[in-house]
Length: 282
Image (tube, rainbow, N blue to C red; front, side, top):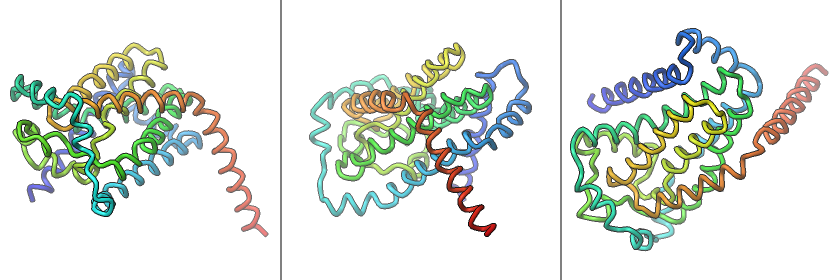
């Protein structure tokens, strides 16, 4: 019952955060009109392709989490000591400044703000019909997952709190079920590189490319809070964050021409669709 109630609360906070952030990025239009316009444009083939690519990436992430423990057990390796050599006491020192209000804020940033700002920025791009930016954001999400996936599978690194007795998992000060629920999408040894860091930065990069001041401010502030939360909450090592920054730089560079790739994919899918229609009509 408690888990069910938390799932309801998690869903409510996420949806509410998406609505609030989307409205903040598009302040001149009532929210119902924003949602209607976004819904209509999402039915266009280019945006449907974005949703499909994002769905495939999310499915890969889900499957990786389901099979992560088996693969980790099979390779029987732990690279945590290697990553912990750099700045191993930084997280412990940072937690000396912990207080409950800050823990609430950064827990919200890590669990809810992180996905909400990604969805909100995508919806803002759809609303303003910035197709190339929606494609860039989707492509960087997919590419980021592919870049980091081999590390999660074959380079297991445990979270700081699970390896250092001087560091606490501060989300437990609010409720232990928060991270229990989070484990359905992220294993405890999927620490290097920091996916939160890389994707938060990629979202900020996409916002900067839009040249929209509201999007830039919201996404940049979100990125700062998310990156800070990864360390403060006792989850990531400093080297995880550094590697996340590098992953973001690689993915952003690789996806600068995402529109051309999406155009090619759309062409191929249209050809396949037409081929199927022709075969059925024979």
